Length: 83
Image 1: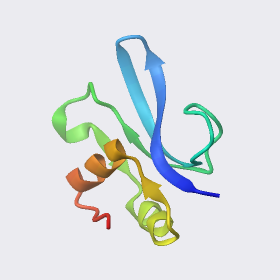
Image 2 (image 1 turned 180 degrees about the vertical axis):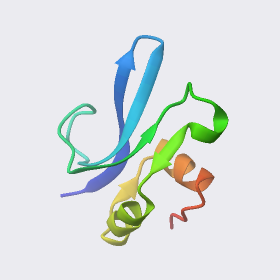
Image 3 (image 1 turned 45 degrees about the vertical axis):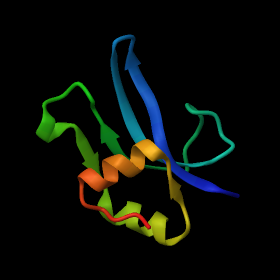
């Protein structure tokens, strides 16, 4: 099973917010996650857009989970290194 860290969309039209989740790569976007590890609110003010559980993300990365391109960008903003 290939595991990815990616975004799961919530909210209404024109007012999205996302949960950062760990999922099987073959699961649908809004399917059941293995674990929820953070939130991303793109509409919020700059300092409050991203909330992450860094210890859980580092644990999943050490187990071989691959972040999506968008999640990789969010992790870099929070200074979590991705190899």
